[in-house]
Image 1: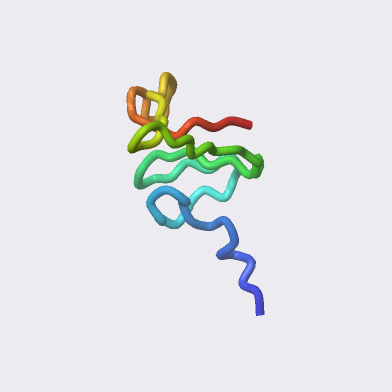
Image 2: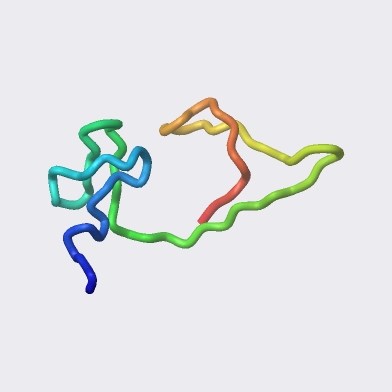
Length: 72
């Protein structure tokens, strides 16, 4: 038996249940904005010497933090 009310009913960032059922959904706990448009992406694990190549994010969320190179 499939329970439809649970599908996409929780924040993928913190796990809090969504109160507002309209899209896009904003989490009342962590303020994360969730859209209902799955988009395929590519992430690259590029070895360099004894580590991996990383980039510093220039946009929100998490601007200034390290991330793996990737894109649409």
